[in-house]
Image (cartoon, rainbow, N blue to C red):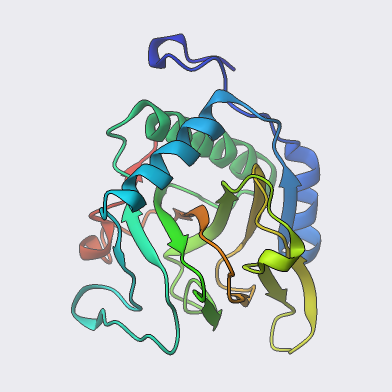
Length: 224
């Protein structure tokens, strides 16, 4: 898939069959994307935003319930708005993912929102779910990692738990081009402390809940 108008030579491919089989069977999937211009551009933009102090401390909750809780999470974020070629390319990648998952699993994915995240040394995010069960707002979560030459000793792994259990199913090293995808309501996860700057993009495909919760849709981009 190419995007010549954006000045990028292509988007990374993914195995839709394997990804969807994993989601249907266990609720999560991890794959390594082939290197592509999009990945390098995203990594450069994320680091530049951080260096220019354009990321802000992240909290928990949304709207009037939003608050900073340093005991729960310590990362900085910046929402994607499609204002750069790299971001536009990532939204195109998310759209390709949406179409494949909807075709195979009929999850009713409608809109997508995402933000850059940086975990500075010592940064973490305690165990949590991305959506309250039954809320059906965020349906499918994804995390794309943008860190080259990441060693196991650098920490910052994504720890995936079994639902309603302390059993650890996987620990995902945040290496460049690794994509983790999981069901937002069902898969508990955490980010263990990082020992150096750790960059990623966290994203959520949402259902069409605009009529029920329009205030939560301000950053979600509707997908045609």
